[in-house]
Amino acid sequence: MLFLQLRKLNMMIKKLLSFFAITIFAAGIASAQSFTITSAQTTYTGDPASAIDAYMQVVNTSSTMKYVIAKRQIVTLASGQFNNFCWGPSCYGPGTDVATDTVLLGAGVTDNSFKGTISPYNNVGVSIVEYTVYDLNNPNDKASITITYDVNSTGINESVKAKIFSQGYPNPADRAVAFRFDAVGMSFDAKLVVRNILGSIVKEQPLTERSGVVVIPTWAFDAGFYFVSLVDGNKPIVTRKIVVAHKRAN
Image (cartoon, rainbow, N blue to C red):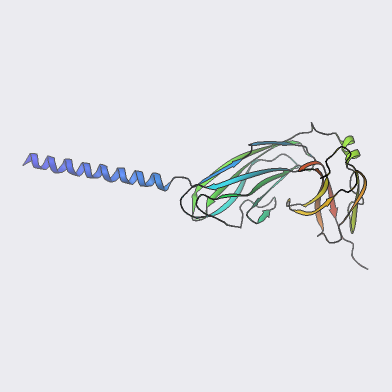
């Protein structure tokens, strides 16, 4: 009788162990992360006069389609600098931490729309931002990357910058703003790129001469802050800040 009881008890213990093993295995599968997020580097350096962009690549490594949200968390922000990010079709200003757009990412599909930008506004210092993507239906299924932006003043000094690309005049501007430039020695792809405060390009203007004065019409711009960069190829050389303020008609 005792032998039978011990045998039954042993069988119950084996069943319980099997149950726990299956449960733990299933939990491990459920908690497996569905995303990877990478960038060309985790530390970006730049000049205080130019915005610094960190482009990120997000991959859905799971076998199912995911609705994906992006967010940012500022770890530290250097005085006078601002951070904004883009995800999917939209870019978000310095006051937004979580994207309102959801990106539908198929199994094994890569998304390249995630971008984090530091706008130094001529302020040096180190800013650190953590960027995260997660499953809309399971926020614990996520992946993160921490990007460091090292803004220093070891680049071109201001007197040289002024010779290459002057401050805009008039500033604030109403209908147009003019810049004096010297692109001698640059590629024939040199151009001016105008971005709004969100980092979105609102105008590109090729430079047809090697030096001189270029005028950018601003009458159609919304009032606000803009950043005008002299770009050689894809590299911003000097960036100037302008304000568009339209005069009221009498």
